[in-house]
Image (tube, rainbow, N blue to C red; front, top):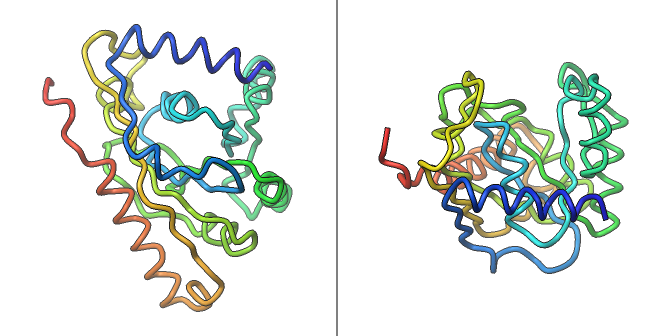
Length: 208
């Protein structure tokens, strides 16, 4: 219940402060486990993804943001769980597997952190390991506009000026065969990287 209350409030605020659009929503399966793999340029990104779909999204978030008790309670209520980015986090990996096997959506930012210049960085391999383990599709997502509104080095977002677009691509399946060796894994990474880059490179905000 808490998730949907917060989602409703967030949706209202986004619609008040910015123009908001979602494309490709028909590409999102209505049920079953699914990994959303998105670019990440702003603290707004998880919120924007959350309000773009009716289905719940379980996010993996860096453990540093959970150290504040209020953030911990808020994020936990929104189905987020922490991951240690400095090592192989078995606990987070098992939690991600559980979320997907229960038929839920897992939101991942495969770059591992926000991009400080707005450009898509190299993807980490975790998303492919989780996909291989669960057999669920990976849906590339491009978030456009949040970098203009609230880039990493800005203290407060800019209101009433820019547009936000969430652009959903086509689900991709990555089998054990696809990532069984270094060459195949590199091809899979390049494929997903190119798709996310294309979806997130739309020039929707030309006011700077």
